[in-house]
Length: 336
Image (tube, rainbow, N blue to C red; front, top):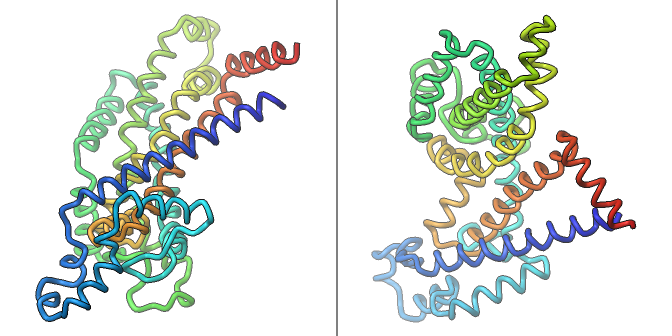
């Protein structure tokens, strides 16, 4: 019990330090940005027609003249009290904007994450089982081609093919244009998420496939697999009893570590498809100098990445018997 409590406290402390660090980094980058909030959101022509009192009110609203340290400490104090502030662009609480955008992004990223992991594991297994033959060469060539293809270019290609030319899927957005929130069905959200999720899954597929193939090739060349073949075990039996077990640990590490890559790719993909998710929200907040919203997106995204790595750490003890043995031995020494 004490070991688990210590592990939880250590992870909680690391998460707090991580969130503090990324929020400070985002604040410093936003403070050093050359963009003028007034010219960006109001426009130079409109500012020329305003009085000095109106301009002073806008500067006070956007916090242009506030000291940077005072702004950050004020935001940090409010966060510790459960208030992430009000979005300067949308004029609603940041938590409300994040809840709406996070719902769309989680659905999109979860679908892409599961699809890339499943297909990557399957294709990597097929490539390793047929090492040196045409399926292996075909899969490796396709993975190298995909890994060198920019995500935004692939998104544009899929958009032109399936939306513009064939007309099978919507051309963009996360919901139908002009539809009320209560009238949007699950099927509507699914159709609008197909192309963005497909783009994200394809871009993350190559890495998982190549790593799975490499690990399985090492396993298939080991002595215990040679002994299994000498006993007459078939290739499917060897892959099931020896391959999957030995490649599970690196596959878990790679899959949960890819959450940060999927979120980074979603920024470009959501921009291309005008998908109203967390990535699009980050771009809008950054270009619009909406500091409270940008800091909120930064904290939430960092928490998602940390959560993925934490789940991977917890699964290590379930998958690897050596790690379970070390944990058990540590508990026994602690009890003694």
